[in-house]
Image (tube, rainbow, N blue to C red; front, side, top):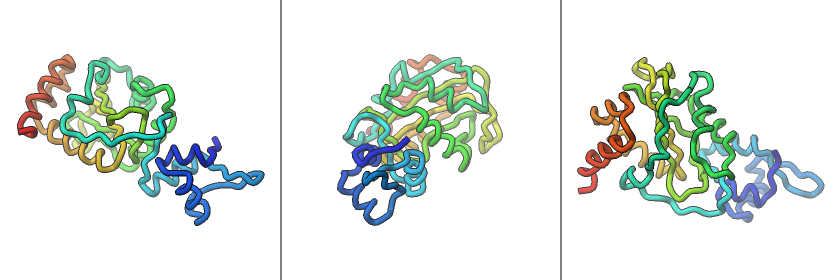
Length: 222
């Protein structure tokens, strides 16, 4: 798929002037077709991956970075998916298909970036939990990062660090690198709590999980 300059500016969260400078300096893959500058989307994604550049794959031209102080404003009933029919070969596609993205979001790009991250190293961190996330930040048409909890009907062998099968997948899509690191640190703290890990493993109702998150976050907010 070919992109025009205005499309690329939105995808890279840059101005058209900045994109033209990249073209002029030959710092970005492009072609000249009938005096028009065009960009191949797949090549641009590979280029962005190599430079850790965030991508805006929504229809929104602008966004404001959400500051993470608590997970609770990010989570609703729709953030939890129970009894998911996942397979070890296709769980990324199956998970992405279920996720609540805006219609304008290119799910194929998300699948591509999630798979690219898993090829580097498994995101299964141990204790039956995996934290799949794209290799680079993504803007997906919302004013907050996305967190979804998926509970596969059958545990998955995803080459976890401790060798244990995965019972919970927590999909994370952040808007910026800074936000992603903050979100990972916040999640790591919560997942260090045995009661939260047990609630996830035993597939407790989302209301119970939210209650445990709230009580665990309280010391952080004091």
